[in-house]
Amino acid sequence: MAGVYKLEIAESVEDLKPLLRSQKSASDKERVQLLYLLKSEQAKTVQAAAELLGRHRVTVQEWLRLYRQGGLSSLLSHKRRLGRQHSIPQWAQDALNQRLQQAEGFNSYGEICQWLESQLGIVAPYKTVHQLVQYRLKASPKVARPISAQQSPEQVETYKKNSVRIWQC
Image (cartoon, rainbow, N blue to C red):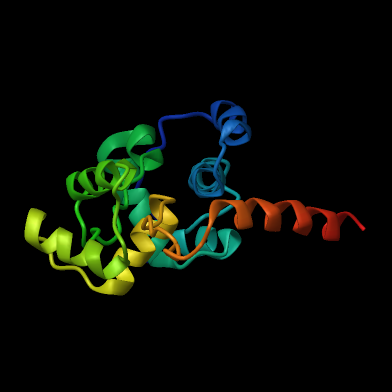
């Protein structure tokens, strides 16, 4: 008969019930629930189990293939998803972070881009460097404020004292 699965589930219904309750993730719970439905004969076919779980038949068949190949441990194991690689490698990020911690620092993000290219050989767009430094490294270029040569320290102190009084009013 088409659609009837040919799989011997080693665990008993009594073993699957506590295993089902102990699962932390929804994905693992669904996979154990699949075994439970088939073992307890609440679902007689793969299609019926897929409908009860709200999954596509091919997904359920893939789960059963994993169980057939490696048992319960294979069914509940997940591949680590890496995502896209960073355009600036970790070793370069570490070197940049050390350089940002130094007293002289950088004057701008453009200067950081030039430093990356000249010292480390990494060409990175301005936007990438800005996001790396600002959001991931939680740093910023150290730009000194310009001070007028005509400015006297006494006038600065007088201004600070008077401006405090204004804000306290």
